Length: 438
Image (cartoon, rainbow, N blue to C red; front, side, top):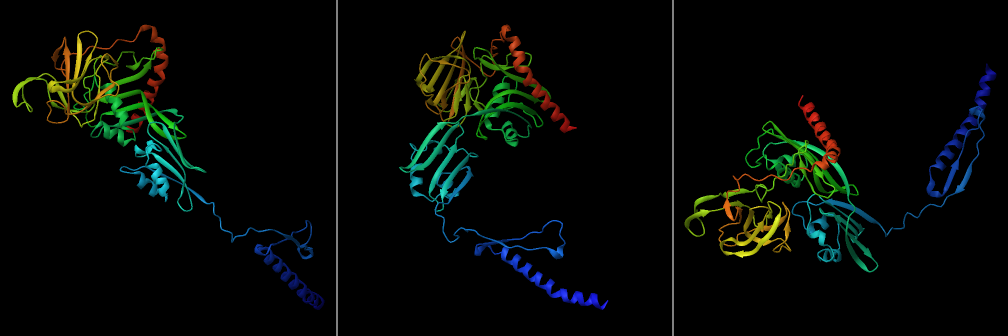
């Protein structure tokens, strides 16, 4: 027993010495700033007490941390907010560059930035001092603006972006208005306008809407590099108004003439739109006796006045040709369109005509022909609209409007092939909505 104890006592200094060496090696490996790396390992099938240690030393060149980098750059992106200006946008992008500010304020260099669309993204690259190196903006019309700093200074180019079409589906319920409903599910106002155009002959969107009415739309959205640019065409829609369902699908003939039909093939389009201004209010109706606010006397009012802000686009209510474009007495700026048969329409008090509009020009239904104003005998901004039969004005809100041409039977098979998948999408969304109600 005494011999075993003596043997253990004689091994303690050796064990202590090995521990000190091991700690030194570990400490040395954790100090790379001295340019030394130490490595050690265990050989297989050896007892821990008899492990041979070998130190490997290699010089490693470390980077000079004291050297300052002078080519640092930063990428930032900002979403355009309502009321933004070029200056406020550059400020949020951390651009501190008077040269760039002056360059971007020139419409010849950056025309797109003069139409800042809320919600759109602007991306900018700057150096560490805020100097602009690169800027990218995609507007709501698919125009792409690129500004780059070159050896010759800032240069810009505007080009049409490559757009990818995706088909999306959304549903919403009416709470207060059609626009509020589309806003609640992130649909642009243009979708609400298209819905009103599609079903406007069956639903009066100013009077007939009720809380709880709901709609479903299948529509195109155009993207560029993953960023939504603008809404395309509605391909199919269903609107349930006061418990009654109205459906529409889009079909385009091989000749390029497109329109909306019921899933059974009935043409939804009327020969005439009821109103040349969507969602406007009637300020004065058709009557044979009205006190004229401008002339200050009683006389017949042989049209309908639609109140709207100056500059609101005015649409042609039917296909036709321009019969008159100019100034005429109390009408002020006036456009008269001649349509098929005995029909014509008149649009008065305009602030301006559509660019390039001239007598004899062919016009399509829904095409913008002018803008609301208050020229002539007008006391406020509005559109005076007349519907004439054999040049005699009749009440456009009460007259029976002629229907549009039905679908040519030779397109029946193509119609079924094209529109059945759209109707199935509407059925899918209806089932989803019913499941949510359950």
